[in-house]
Length: 132
Image (tube, rainbow, N blue to C red; front, top):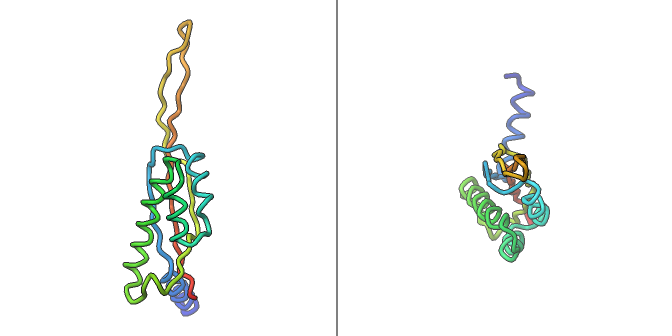
């Protein structure tokens, strides 16, 4: 590896010290429904985001709340020398992408059948520390 490439890699590694992420694969909620809840907490401070998710009646908010707690725990494990109270953590990004789809058949009148598509999603959340 060249010198410039090494310097750039070290800089990128240093910037990623404050970032932690968590991912949830094959969640059985439709991606469209998950994105509605994810849009509420994108760019918000983590304590406020947890409060929003706790008081949201949608089913997707429970799994996003668990995922956000996991990302916070990952940040704490990565930054053992720093305390959570001193740092202001924000939800930097939430990406909701489509996962596999279960295809089922629903019987209809006169021998016909409709296809039922049970959609699922993958979610990746990134928590970023911002110094006060």
